Image (cartoon, rainbow, N blue to C red; front, side):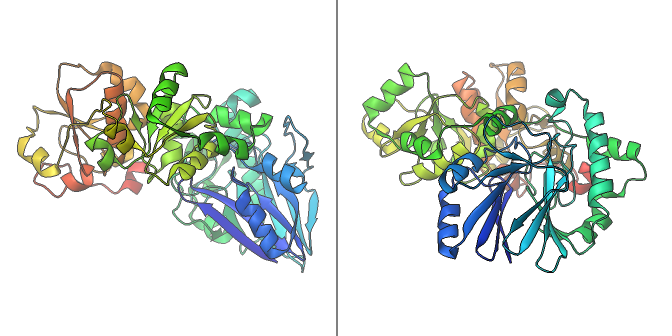
Length: 470
């Protein structure tokens, strides 16, 4: 028996590959399936089942493409109603893979169909729990995403989650290995550990949600401090439930190289959004007017989902040459399948063609320190609220990037302001959006708070973020 966690850091997502005696199972696969096909061929095993822990909200699973390519059936837990052929398992149903067994544990609460999969080894020992979004390391799944579909309140869903955890999961042996669907950085929970594997025994000791004195206390604890989910989540759920275009076709279309003229024509005729995936440093020096910058070398896909929202939005790419395939692939993971192509040669081609360009007014942290006047200058901090509360520039305003469409409307275009995040990635996203909407009276600070903190700019006293998160 072999169990492998295939972890994708930019999505904070864990897929799982299990083999035993010539057969395999894959749990919660990513959108692109070729790496799994290659692995199966290399190991000389047949994919017997594709297990889905639930209808994912934060990414589009590769279950449908993988099933078509391997003929392996897709398995969901009880109550799931996908619009394609699948096995809807019963609670406690057992599936055999080689010499091992996988037992379905229906654990509603995060969603109604949410299920965990318990791995039982060749000797009949309960070995590992693939816990999906029911149980994370240090946290549990948020109970507010399925309210509309379940026609229930988040408190009612939290109550179901309590029953699932305390009646189905906690009675399992302490030495069972927990393999969650997500880790730190995912919006599917609020307090996840950076580790991606742990024992159930350790989680019983340190996970706040598993140590509540009552069901009422649990409900309060898991619903307290939940931030609104990213707006694209519902669209990803729909794709996972209803189906989607083949990834191969999405990739083929997205990798269409466009000349400057073709690119310009597509932007005008299709109402396409120009997405520049270069680094914030390169983008600041020059870009195509109205472009939105979300750098590939960061939490690219989640920020695309949070900022663009509509997965049907046509997109044109401006990327560093050679990175186009990665950009299209990562966009598809969160359902953005309508990439019309990319600018061949990247921004340099546009610039060399003599086309109009734009820049962001970016200054160094040292320049910022020399010209800012605390109490007089307006400073906007686009980091998360918890980062801001831990430590920030005195008199700075907290305006998280995730809510830019809300707070942007309150900006006085006549009043100058400084803009920063932690390192420059998020503030450049904000800067590009602001300029695309006509706001130009601001200065963005290179290196963000991490660099500003090394200057003499007055800061508040540092507070540990774990205390801030409570």
